[in-house]
Length: 235
Image (cartoon, rainbow, N blue to C red; front, side, top):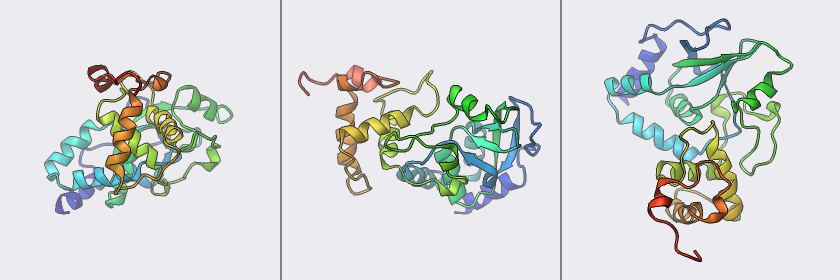
């Protein structure tokens, strides 16, 4: 906990001597922003993963946390009204917010000027995922406005764990690949409940499904584990 308190202090006091983010911040630049100012571009997170990330970071020393956060790129798009839209690292950012961290360093990957075409540009660049956990459409107005409001998408946890285990790859893919897998897994598993008590069993089932030919249309298929250990015929 002491390490976390120190990290929060370091971030909030500008430990990396970064300028505050502004609506005119240059594309490609790093700046510091309040987590309360970051708007999600997806409908939810895998809360089990968020809590796990928080627990892992809590065990690190202040020096380790400082080094880690310098490597973790939190990309944002600046909207025509000056708002900051979080394109990736929603799980990490929510874990930081849960721990009481107030500010973080981010990288500006785009600054969009046209209000009328803002959301079409966001989708064309794969900077927003306007679908819920089950793959049903969301409007931009239905997205949570604050990182702390992101609800739990349990199948997003399964997808994230599958990726970590090498069952599909995000390399060279666009953002939000895990959501395509989450929706597909839910459909294949009849949306059975996913929680801490049954996570191991659900993940074992998801691993079997991930190597099935039915997953061929999903991004990142097949993962390294599926190539090393192909499913048996008829599985």
